[in-house]
Every structure is written in C-alpha cells, then in structure tokens.
Amino acid sequence: MVYWLIGIAAALVLALVLWCLAIKPRRGQPGWEALDGVRYAHRGLHDVDAGRPENSRSAFRAAAEAGFGAELDVHLMADGALAVVHDSDLKRVCGKIARIEDLRREDLADYPLLGSGESIPLLEDVLAVFQDRGPLIIELKAARGNAAVLTDAVMERLKDWKGTYCLESFHPAVLVRLRKAWPAVLRGQLSQRFGPGDRTGMGRPADWAMTHLLVCALGRPDFVAYDHRNADEPSLRLARRLWHVHEVYWTVRDRQTMLRLEEQGGTVIFERFVPEGPAAARREGRRSE
Image (cartoon, rainbow, N blue to C red; front, side, top):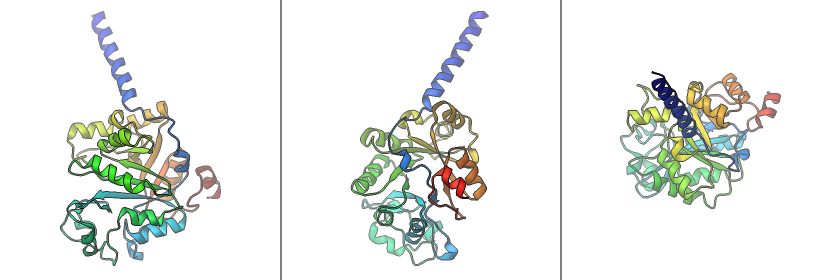
C-alpha cells in the first residue's frame, strides 16, 4: 500500500514537472520592448459605418495615423501572393462563395470588402502604411498544410521592411518553422479555451493541447496571445507566475477591460472603441487617462 501511494505521488510530481516544462516560453529574446506598451487595433481601426471595413487599407491607415499598432491576418494565395483577410471563406466579408487560397492577386479586384469600394489588400500594401510607424502583430493563417510555405513567404516580404513586428499563429507548425528557420523573429502562440463551440479543426486532442498551452513545447513562443475572456485558464496562469510569459489579449471591446488587463501587465488588441493615449507606454498611458 505504501509503495502504491509513493508511486502515485511520484507520477503526480512527474506530471506536474512535465506540465511546467511543456508550457515554458522562450526567454530573453530581444525586441519585446518595442512591441510592449502599444495598443493594437484589431484588423485595423475598422468601422464599417464610417466606410472602413476590417482588414482594409483605410482601416490600417486610420490606425497608423492615430498612433496605434495593428493586428492583421495573412493567407497564402494560389500564386504565392499574401492576402490580408481574416477568413479563408470569403462569404462573410465579400458576399461571394470562394476561398482565398484558391484565388490569385488579380482576382482580388472582384472581391469588395463588406460592400465597400475597397478590395482585399496584400501584405505589402499594409507594410507600406506602417513603414516607420506603429508596430504590427501579424497572424499567419495556415491552411491545407501550408504552414512552412506561408511562413517563409511572409518572412521573404518582411526581410527588407523597415518596421517593427512580431508573428503569431494558432497553428503550432508555424511556430515550429519560425523556431527552426527564423529564430531571431519574435513569435507568439495564439490560443483560447477550446470547447464544443470552438474547435481548432485539428481534432479534440489538439483542442485540449491548445487550450492548455502544451503546444508551447513545440514552438517555444516569446509570448502567448489568449482570448481575454479566458485569462483565468490554469495553464496561462501557471505560465504567468512560473515563467513570466509575455501576454497579449484579444479582442478587448471596452476601455475598462483594456485598463484592467494593462494594469496586470498584458498587451491589448482592441476593437469597437478608440482608446485615449493611443501609443503610450502602459504606465504613462494609465497616468494620462
């Protein structure tokens, strides 16, 4: 009986140690100081009523001119072009049945965003807006097993860009590719509490591993970008306390939540309101507001 209890205790200790090691981020990579203390407009400073659809050139111009950074989504097209749009399926944002991965850059003129006169931009269009301006959080939307090719294509566009950025993705294979081929680039693991209404598309074991940040063992991210509504997730709390992981929270839709998360040390991606003190460091921003 005693040996049995000792065995159980040892197994629990081993499981705890493995859990702690699995969620460990990369530590000490330079560059985070240029990204921290900035507020990031989700898909640009979009307002469809004002004629600025999400992930549009006008939304990104508005964010840059207001002094914000921006978060954006990138897909690899059939001809190797990089489209800035959230969904693979274009029905919601363009009202047409098509997948962005099946289109070529010349096709984009036929896909206006949310009934506006704007078409889906390319990554280079957004980079031009943010040259020498606020930093970017670039989410890589891997599809059909293209994680490595997408990552390399994005890095090819970014290699000569004079701006500040980091890359993030839900797909662990993107972070693995960055870790192996582009180790100097700051990388982030996107996640949330996956349940019946939200799936990774990679199966339930992947849902569970993503929720609990166990995939960090593969990509060793510099930061974790998590749904702010799930900020109490045990693995995120443990990574915060044990490893002091950099935290980015999405998508914040009110000022009070933004200030609370910033007080806790988080970096915020926001939408549906315009914060005051747009690009101030957190401590300075709290004083000014």
